[in-house]
Length: 279
Image (cartoon, rainbow, N blue to C red; front, top):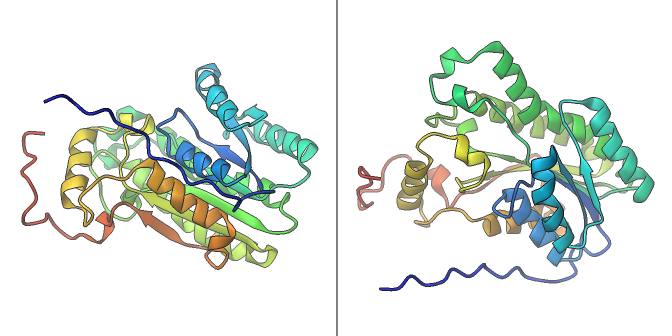
């Protein structure tokens, strides 16, 4: 039997985001969740800017940004306040104002994700919390200052913030703090007509996921035991991101929207699920 070619799902086009401008942070390659969101926003008319950190990621981000007509591809290190200031200074000069921000940034030492959470070092705890959680607050403060007519802020989280997931460890703690930040930011910024939400995506084979041990097993487990009996795609996340960032989601803020084929509602293995003990 020959293997059929895999075709990329089509992205619906339209004018839902025409006239809207926003910043996408965290694209690593064309498998990134942030890229899935960017594709949907661009297809609906949004004007996008992108950030990258380091030469290696710049080489990946520039062609993708160019493919959706972006002229603003900026370096940014979220551990450096001056670097973040430079990004928003450029956006203020080029755009004057903005409508949305997508934060898809997280980091932890992958060596510390292999063992037990109890052995997390202070240095890695602080770094993980800074990059994966506090950076969203720091960016929200800067972005909201450029949203005089309201806007929408979106970050990405994972079920490991709610439940213990093997090999997730300190990232689960950081994501739990991020989810709480979403709620507090929503309360802080609501009077400015700025909405703040998060997407809790199911496991997707991204560059970030490569640092999680037994990830192939986790993918299969989710596929076999989620109600939809399939894994999440970046297109699933892109569609949800479009909803939350557009006027379609104008009454939604402070929410953690699960886009995981329903896995978060499951309490145990599906009785008829295939055996994955050999995966």
